[in-house]
Image 1: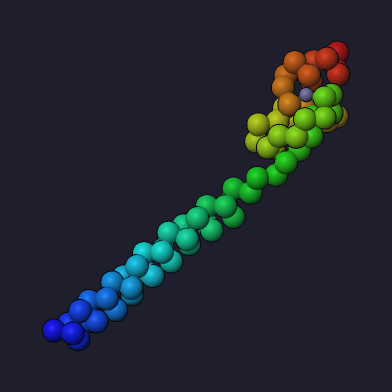
Image 2: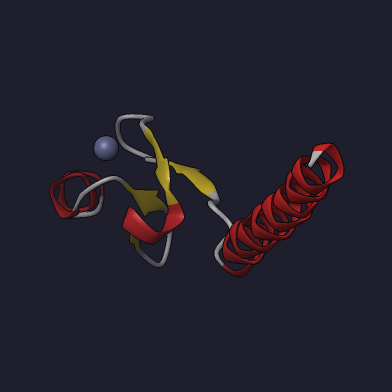
Length: 72
Ligand SMILES: [Zn+2]
């Protein structure tokens, strides 16, 4: 009976490690596929993710309003 409980615990730990490793690999591949590159608004100096920034020919801005203010 003692060994049966031990066996159950060992299998439980192995299953838990497998589950943990699978989820951490998902997280790692998710971050490497989409890196968060921070850029700075040329008008107000706000830092924001590149995918949310307004890209113009001269510089990067936090919003279309700031792009218009700086480049009209
Ligand atoms: Zn701005």
